[in-house]
Length: 190
Image (cartoon, rainbow, N blue to C red):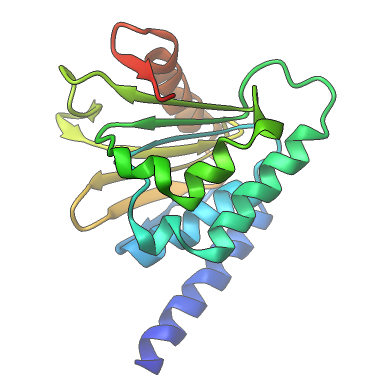
């Protein structure tokens, strides 16, 4: 088991370094643990916005992780103190909404009254199961329109990303905003 911990620790250190330095270098992701590491660094290093397209935020490995919860709350606290925030800074879109989310710790954080206006949570309407890229369902996270993680194998969590690929990140962000802004496809999660 310690070999696995060392591999994750080395991966976490490398991803943290790449995120801090905003490296324009593709990284790979091959497990839920790698997804957790990357999502923490995307949010930790975000300066203005984060958009997440995910299943349901019910995976306990990610969404009950104490450090992840702390990073999300830290980002929202930092953005709460920015005087000119006019639109949500953290947007979440579910493609497999599960009502269990409402009882989760991540939901309790995202729905705190002091974050009102900073967080937008939507779900795909039942007629739409996934968002697709190249005929594959994807999950996606974009930070500051510069960094991203895109998951193209939703079962095995196979993904890749980059902490400073403005062209791709902006394209992915634009695509996600299209869904957030077009209520034909999505509806609010109360």
